Amino acid sequence: MRQLNAFIKKEFTEQLRSRRLYILGAVFLFFGIMSPAAAKLMPKIIELVAEQDQSFKIEAVKEVSALDSFDQFFKNVSTSLIVFVIMQAGIFTREYSSGTLLLSLTRGMERRKVIAAKAFTLTAVWTACYLVCFGTTYAYTAYFWDMSVVNDLWTAVLLWWIYGLWYIAMIVFFSTFLNSATAVIVCTGAIFLAGDLLAMIPKAERFIPTYLSGSSGLLRARDFDYTPALVITLVSIVLLLSASVPMFNKKQL
Amino acid sequence: MPVLEIKDLVKSFGDKQVLKGLSLTVPEKSIFGFIGQNGTGKTTTMKTVLGLLRADSGEITVAGEKVVYGNTPTNRHIGYLPDVPEFYPFMTAGEYLAFCGEISGMDRGEIRSRSEELLEAVGLAGEKHRIKGYSRGMRQRLGIAQALLGRPRLLICDEPTSALDPVGRKEILDILVRVREETTVLFSTHILSDVERICTDVAFLREGVISLGGSLSEIRRSYRSDIYILEPEGSEAAAALKAAFPMLTDTGSGSFTFRDTELSPFEVMSFAAERKLPLIKLERSEPTLEDLFMEVVGQ
Image 1 (cartoon, each protein chain N blue to C red):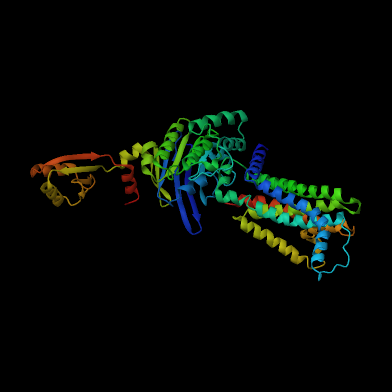
Image 2: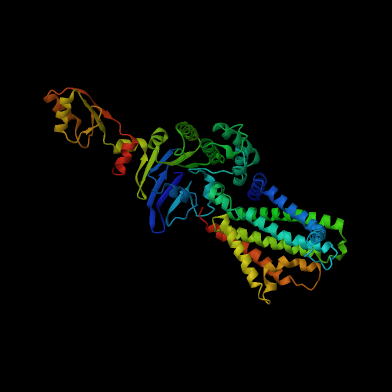
């Protein structure tokens, strides 16, 4: 346990001192503020454009609600997740190229604990950033609008958080046999694209992890069934992390 | 009991067989120079001892325990200094040693006291800057400190001086001599003067096997063909000697050298005495490690 704690502490120190945590925090905070701000300001922006450009005709500007703010949140959080993946994809590969992991391993650091420490750190950073983003959006939204129109917010938020964990599991898995952050990003992106392509088959859509990214649908209606996608996502997270251990054990450093 | 024993180690990378049945024994409390040209397999041997590479065949034991690939428990006996040690640049030297101590499972009090002692020994005490600002020599000294943290029975250093300037080299060699009191040092190098300066035992690695090994003094005794320096007085004497003994090698500074395996010094002396050729000196010179190495590698 001491090995694991020491490595986790090292990972967090690195996140802080490399300023990755601050940058990610700022990005997630920015999108957290932007979601209600965009919802709040959009009608005024549309009116301004309409006033200046006579060819721009508006039938009626609908009244903005808390739902619009959270819609924006779920759009923005996908952009934040891309930034997260790009910034964290090198969490293993940086150690391979610099050779820093070698000394830890020769000191008896167990490889499975390296995986556990890095996966834990990524999960903690993702959770903290996601909470900053959602917490900011939630606070402003609750201040400006009536929240009673929003259905199943917490389930939607939880599903999106789990969707983020799926990307973390992919980063960890690909990092155990790839040597560059770019390759990890490309492979993670390829899986996302493959998921999107599969989702075009109507019968398959509900079984693909990317389906969870549409969890904002829960805010308006209760007839979405995310259970198959959730189960498959959770199973694939467990499988990816489990497969990472033997893959990493085989890796020659 | 030897601290490290390697028997018939074979390791290939693809079609290329780097180690072809290497056998080696490192006695306890020795400073063991592992000598070989670049690319002969020194680093491969060391990484296999550390369980970082899987051997094709052969057996390695450290302190009597067998080395296994992966997380080998024998690493608790070993401190390792790679050729270019890389540390977490965002840490200070003290933080890095504390991290190493924690993952090695050392007692917290011992980590503190041992870190202070080692940082003092390698001249990094009171160094509060982060490692990213360290010079190569400072990194190498920190590398030795981290390798010695757990009081290992065997300190493995992979070319510890090859990238350093003369001052840095001297500092590292001095540290290695000092640590011999508490540990065995195995260090690979191709800088023969470093080996001559501090090693008690050596092994020459050539074409995947140890072509010569043992205590340095014994090797010198048993393997030497002495080199003689002959300095005649005047060009006439020099020309006569060269004509009589074509195997003499001209040093270019008015003297010749020859090996006693090629020419007897008594023969030279009697030749000069018979012809009354004036000589300034005829002197036996100790063969250097470089001479031995050249002989071993056949050049």
